[in-house]
Each structure stands twice: as structure tokens, then as C-alpha cells.
Length: 339
Image (tube, rainbow, N blue to C red; front, side, top):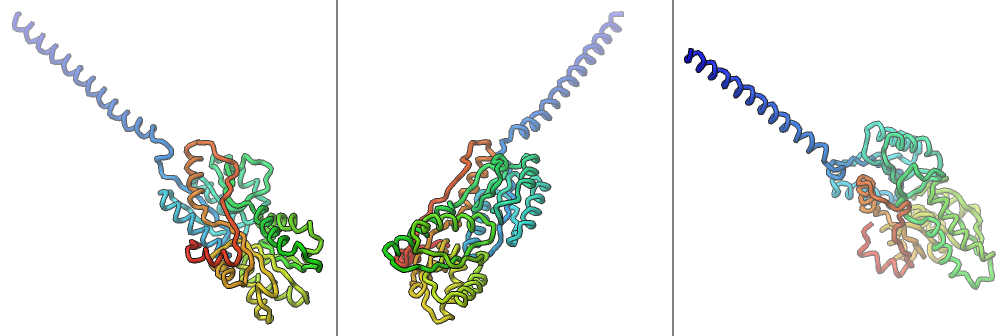
């Protein structure tokens, strides 16, 4: 009997140990599987790869090319996955690109709008999908400011004012009419609308300063040349050309020279951008005054993207710092010009 009790006790103890080991093993397994999950769940948003969908207007000018390179280089430096789309200056292409970014569930969408109007529907789609939007270089005219986080870029109206102020100063004592022709940017675009508005605001105070012709040159050199040729045929006396960007001014210079006139002397030229080709023309005396529009927005954009992802407060309007150049100032600045 004593032997049977002894063996019974041994078997009981063995079973208790097995159950205890099994329970401990199960508990250890639960703890191990929980830790990785906890680690994944605690990864901050800023530590994950940020996917930035960016839709560019196109490649219509030297300014735009410099702007694109700045964004691409800055995204790479920041370690972001950049999905880039070229709209080729067509709004329908840009809307398709934005919808594609939404379907791909990118982290943030940024774009430079081809024109100001017609964005509310697609921007609301992005908002409903929980994807924040940042505007760069150009604004939209939507009354609903909640559709985008911020607008980074130049003050185009102020650029127009600077151009107008230089002209007003040059002709403040004139007793004769000053005939001005204007090469506008893409019709309906923010820079075209605003640069004209600011310019007219300033020169309007002098009745002698008269815009006798105004037409779009689509921000391109070829179109600028074509329209300037038409201006020269239609008007015997042109004193000043105001071009909304350097590329159109450079095209107009070709037309002026082909007509046997001297740009910068026979026809004063005011331009906006200050890209290298424009600065060279200014240094050569062919452009009299350039208002800078800085295309190197990449670093500011990436900072804004990171702030939005991190849930930080961000200014609704971020204005870039810019200056102006006379011919002499352009000559001095040209050797160190980055774009």
C-alpha cells in the first residue's frame, strides 16, 4: 500500500509540473507576440516613409524646370517617396493626377495649379480621403480654405506692383504718352491675374502710362516671340514691354531685334522671374528691370509636409523672400546665380 501511495504521489507531482510548465510556456508566448505588435503600433508617423504626390504645371520655362528640380532634390534629401506628375499645362491632366494620388493613398498631396478655378470637387475628394493638400507657387480661388493646409509661394500682386513702381519712377516727369504692351502668362492662372493687377494698380495713378495691347504668351519663349511680332506689326510706337516672365521676354527680344530695334533702348523691357537667361539678358542691357520670383521652393515644401504629417500647426500662407534687379545689379549677381 505504501508503495502504491508513493507512486501515486510521484505521478500527481509530475502532472502538476507539466500543467505549470504548459501555462508558463503559454504565458511567455503571449508576451512575445504582444511585444512586436506594441512596437509596430507605437511607431510615430514621422518615422514612417512619407509618400508625397506632386503635380507640376509643366515644363514651360526655365523657372519651372528649376522649381521641379528643387522639389525633386529636396524630396530625395528628406527621404520621401515622391510620385511626380507633369500636367503639361492642362487642368484636366492635373485633376487626373490628383485623383490617382488619392487612389494610391499617398501621405500628402502638393501641386501648383494650372489655373485658379475649378478645384473644389477634387480637393474635397482628397479631404474626404484624409489626405492633406499643400499648394505651391500658385493659389486657387476656392472660398473653402479648409480644402488645403497652406499655400507656399510668391506674392504675385506684389511682384506686379514692383514692376509698375519701377516704370512709374522712370517716367514720373514725362509729358508724353508712354505706350506699353503686356505679355500675360497663361490665361486664368494666378500669376497672370495677379501680376497684371499689381502692375495696373501702380501705373494707374499716371494717366501718361497707357497699356495699348495685352495678350497671353502662355509663359513660353516661342509664344512670347509670336505675340511680340504681332504687337510690332499692329503698333507703330511701343515704348515699354511688360512680360509676366523671363521666357516670354526673351522671345520678345528676338522679335524686337528681328524688327531692327534695340531691346532695352528703343523698347524698355520689364520682366518677372530672374532665371539665368533673363539675368544674362539684363546684364547685357536688353532687359531693364527684373522682379525676382524664387523657384527654389523644395526645402520649404518638405518642411511643410513634415509639419503636416506630425500634426503641427502651420501658417496658412508662406511667402518666399524675393528681390529685384536692374541691369547693373543683374550683372553683379549673375556669377553666383543658382537658377
